[in-house]
Image (cartoon, rainbow, N blue to C red; front, side, top):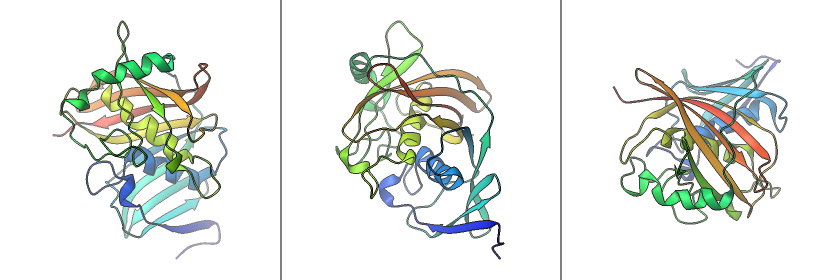
Length: 241
C-alpha cells in the first residue's frame, strides 16, 4: 500500500541504458533515482547505494518517502538514494585537448569486459556516451574528452542529470582497471552543480583513491572547457570474488 506521504511511479529501463549486459548502467540508474528524490535541485550531494543489479525492460517501482528514494522489483530492493551533507573532492581539471589525447591510452581499447556499456562502451556515435578515459601523463589521473551527443536530451531538449551521473560513473572504475578487468559499482555519491548542454564538449576526469579488500575507491568530475566544475562524485566498486 502507498501512504499519503509516499510518492510512487513506475520505471522501465530501456536497453539503451545498459552497463553489464542485461542490467542498467550504474551511474544512469543512480542519477534516475536521484531525480525522483529531489528533481532538478542541486543543493546537496546524494549518496546512492546499488543493492542489486537493475534489470532492463522490466516494470520497477520508484518510491519517494521523506528523504529517501528507492527502486524495487517486487520485494527486492535494487537502489536507494539519500541526500548527504558532504563536500565532494574533485580530481584536478584536465583541459579538453589533453583529456581527448588521453583517450588513446584507454585500457578498454585492448580489452573491455562490458563493451556495450552506455557510458564507456564501444557504442555507435550518438547511441552511447563513448567516454574512454586514459592515463594523463605525469599525473595520477585518467581523463577523456566528452562530446555530448545530441541524442541524450529529454522532451524539453535538456540533458538530464541521469546522463551526467553516467558520465561520472565508469571513469572512477577505469582509474583502477587494466585491459579486460572489471568490477561492479556498489555506491556512487555525486552532486551536479551546473547543466550540461547537448553538443557541448567537456572534460571527464577520474582518479583512484584507494583499495580495501574487494572494494575499489575513486573520485571523478566533469568540467567545462574553461575549468568550471560541472559535477563531482566519489564511488565504491566491488571486484569479483
